[in-house]
Image (cartoon, rainbow, N blue to C red; front, top):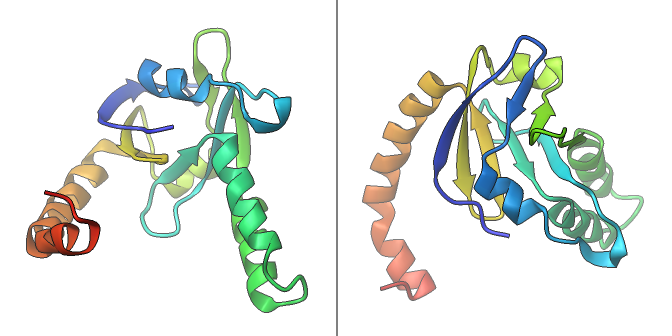
Length: 156
């Protein structure tokens, strides 16, 4: 699964928003274990004031990593509570929309528009003006750190 690009969609009065077609196509593939879930997993971002989302396979991998920790450790409990306890399964309706919970709408300060930003294995849902401000700062950081991609990752 690879989420790329940026798309803007309207949020209706009920909190429904259409997930971009290319994102839905990535999510529509059968998930491991024979189960199928047609939708997204959404949670409050740890880093930014936005909603982060992914497919169920990514949450399963995160859950496996959490389970590899000492089950009685503070880290295990913190990650399980924050990541798994804070995640919501949002199923697609017949038109490819999901219903964003009020808690996520409020946390991300979403109003009538949502900006979907692909970030590889995840994507984010932003209030468009907030993302524009963040993108400007992110571009400066990326420009300043651009050589790290070449040095550490071997990217040309």
